[in-house]
Length: 127
Length: 127
DNA sequence: CAGGATCCGCGTCGATACTG
DNA sequence: CAGTATCGACGCGGATCCTG
Image (tube, rainbow over all chains, first blue to last red; front, top):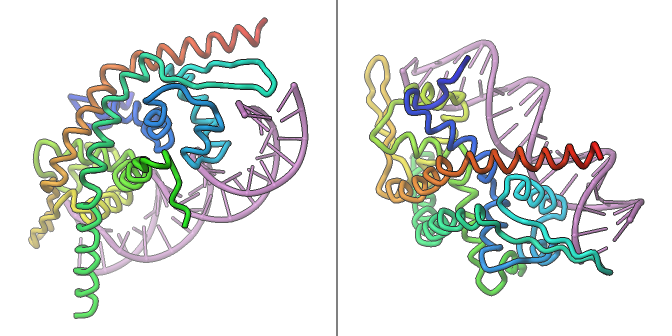
């Protein structure tokens, strides 16, 4: 029974890992982020996220399955399907926004570090 | 010049997407999480995370390149290399911890939603 | 112990075509 | 409009071998 994956006694890593497997991918995060200010239609999300129809479909299905978004089907012509964050999904807004905030605040620093690293590498190569 | 990827006018999505591409993968998050309470040696991380040597190596290299962790090489015999969060890496602790907290708090709800979804599906299939 | 190099399966993702 | 089904390309990630 191999339970010792991460920090051993604490085992928080497994939980994090498991949750990350579910909502940790880029599209899920972005869908949730985009859904933060209300319900959206399928193609609306598709356009705004510039995501393939396949991945959006899969992502939304998984998010619905995991209880993070709810699906509202209007059987009209043409069909109209809207997606909305559930309460559980709403509770993810905070973490996602914290991450988003960090991303916006620090991506410049990352780029700078990257450039510095590459410069150092080039110099080492030249020397 | 196709700049309109996400929310159009806001364009936060691109930034988030870009940052997620860098630090959004599972291993990076877990390494940062594991490094939260101090520096660790290579094989120490390897064991605790149950990660292959290859992925740990790649992950650490990228993390170092992006200025999130620093590498301390002790040229002894046997060699000893320690990794530690930089200030930038430290600043990521908060977002990661918020996410970790959410993961711990809500993974049960996700599992429940999942089970409910599957049950509903099975019933639909049976009916 | 730390980690580079190589090989390779497997899952992910996009493009395309089709349905209701 | 809102998907599903299929296919093919690509990259992630593990296993293995080798060096310093």
